[in-house]
Image (cartoon, rainbow, N blue to C red; front, side, top):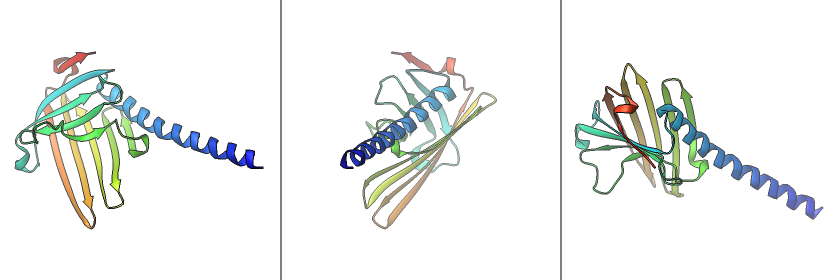
Length: 171
């Protein structure tokens, strides 16, 4: 009886771990498909619209899938802190952090929930759309600490969007 219980617990743990890793892989695959890339680093320069001017006017969308385990999809403004790669989705986190993954022909929605402890966390949703050579990224990020929360919204528009005109580095 104990052996059956142990095997059942191990199977459940293994299935849960595989499901978590699968969510991360599905999210990565969705980004690859949306941008039509594989193991590349892309950077698109655009402008913020309907965004707090404290972030600046110019924005950069960074998609880095070049280093396995350190992939990310971020947006960075002129006044982002030095050394940061921006706000967005980070694939070096556990698979269970990916709550929503929706890919359509010209749009992608990713939501990631990070929790540092019982009292702090961050939920980030990135909405991407492309239409008529325009790429639009909208980021909603809610950070919470104890009973306080702050929500940030950023919208970055890239005109004349084409993967071939972006900075692309194969590694």
